[in-house]
Each structure stands twice: as structure tokens, then as C-alpha cells.
Length: 455
Image (cartoon, rainbow, N blue to C red; front, side):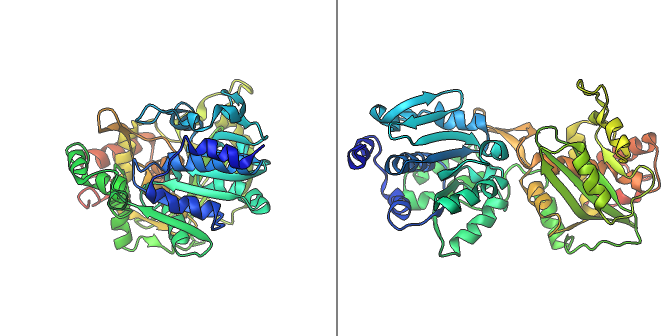
């Protein structure tokens, strides 16, 4: 296979913009293996990244992954994606260089034996572990499963392969932390491009966007702002005030006080368990467990191995669907957990939006350990409403992504708080919840007192 000739064939289909050239040079000439691009919306991030993968696959035979946050996202954006000029993403690959296509698995095999495959970072353990890639692109990294890179990093290191991260900001989450590392490390090539740097979107267009988008969204999407706030966030400003009040920091375990746990149980996705103590009117979130693709027995063992003294006979809390019987066993997870020595209290089934409101009014009494519960804090910052791109408005429901599991567990924790204050009945819990949501404080539980007017 004539590499130079085939590279020229590809160049006829891809002409990079001037501001994209430094990234191409960093990967192909300067020898960088880790590249981070914080670029504004509509800057052509996926176009340049996908073409870099094509060029790499032409030059060196190997496996190359292009990962978006989900499998369906990868199909929509790249496999079925069409640019504004009508060109398809897949048409960047010259047809004479393609040996075969597998539409079901989104694989393209080149005539030289290289394989390009689109994957979802949310299924990284299943799709990436055990593979031997020469290069990986993580597109929309701020929305991706952060552990995906951890699963594939050893293989990239062994092969001296590259990892390219492209994204716009989504608050101060894992992408923000990686950006901080990248821009301060000589091992990384780091590029930040706003509309002022690229010139592909005029200020007249930005001002037109302001008619339908909030200023926070404008700053985030077009000026790459991490500090504009997590647009559409349910809990962002509550966390900001908690930080100002010193409620996010070192929260030590107090052995003389009982502990409780709230569970968001995943079946084929992530399970999150939050552990807390109630000390007077203060709720101290001291620890968390999170993992994926593990059975109930795995989490039961982890809980039993903790040194904590649990509060009473039923110190663990789970949502109402834990009572649903599984077809394979005929038993519910509630019954299975009981056989493993984990006794759950089942929380009442209340509307999601009411549960979110209850969590908001609970923040004033909650302290969170910033080290052991770091991923909880990041998830709460990033938990937000889903955006309706067609109508240019936020939907009434949360976006279901990697942040949902920890946010759900936090909501269950808040719903369980009255039961850690002396074992309230279901009726008492319902009354306390309604008073928290609707503003009556005369008989409210101390955990929720004086919080409704704080924020």
C-alpha cells in the first residue's frame, strides 16, 4: 500500500482550517501522544479529529477507536452524520481505501488492514478492555464516562498510541480537571479556541443566538467558559453556596454516631451508594461506593467490610423499584439483599421533580467530604435539565447521563433523612416531605427547618 499516495487521496477530501493545523502538527510531527482540544461549538472539532484518525490509520496499521458519550450518539454524529455542506462524515474516507464496512458494529476496515470503529464511552469496559488500539478519540469528553480513558490507557501506553480529547465545557467536572492538567503539562498538547480565535462565527451571529440562548449558554458554548455556571443545572448554585459556607471539605467519620446508606442500584450500568451520619441537625456525607456491572453480592460485601456502625435494623435505603420481582429468580432485589444481610427501607415513590426540590431544600444542612465523595460533587454540579435543540428550550426532565446515578442516590439520601431522626412512619415522612416542598414549617423535621428561604 502506497502510504504517500493514499494520504494524498485523503487530502483531496479534507482541507483543514488554519487554526486546526497546530493540532495536526502536534500529533503527526511533534510526537505528542496526549492532546486536549477545548474548542467552541461549530468549530469543526469532530471533522478534524475524525480525519486525524483516518490519516493515522492510513499511515500505521492498527485499531483506532472514535468514542462519543454513547453508542447511539456515535451513530448519529459520525456514522450517519452529515455536514452543513451536505458531505457525510464517512465520505472523508476515499472509497478505494475501504475493504469493508460493518454498519451494525460501526466498523470500517481499510485495505491495509487498519480498523476504525465507533464506540460509546459509556460501554468502555465491554467494548474497549482487551483491545489493542493505536489511537483513540474521545469526542464530547465533558459528557463522556470518565473511566473510559482509564480502561484503555494501558494499551495506548504499551503501543505508544495517542489519545485525543475534544470537547466544549460542561461545568467544573472531569473534563475541567483534565484540561487543568493538560495546559500545565509538557506531556500534553493543549489547545483552546473560542469564537474570537477561529472567526468562523461572527459576533452578529452570536448576538442573534442571544435571542434564544441564555448568556450562560453563550459563554459556555462559544467562549469555552467553565465559570459561567453549569447551564440548566439543578444543584449548581446550591453547591456554590455550600462551598462558601464551608460545607464542602474534610468531613471526618465520627465513630460514636450511627451511619446510614442510600442506594441507586444499577442493573447493567452504575450503582452508587452514599453513606452518611446525622449529627444533631447536620447531615455528614462521609463516603460513597460506585461501580458498574457488579452483582448485588459485590455491594453487600463492600458494605459489610466498612468499619461503620449502622443505625438500627434497617439502616439502608433504596427506591421503590427494589421490590420489583425479577423474572429469572422470581425474587425481588429487596428479598435477595435481605438474604445477604442487607436490610433495606423502601422509600416512597414520589414525583421526580418533587424529589429534586426536596434535595434542594436539604442542602443547607448537608456537609460533603470533598475527597471520598469527589465524584458525587462533580455529578451534582453537572446534573442538569435536558436541552431541546429544536425548540431551543430546556425540557422538564433531567438529562440521563453519567451524572444521573450519583444525583439519584443523593435524592434518595435526602428523602431518607427523616427516617434517620428517630424512625418516622411513612405518613410522617410524607408529611415532612410535603411541608418541605410546599413551604409549611410549623411541624417540619429539624433536618429541613429554616432551609426553604435560604436560596
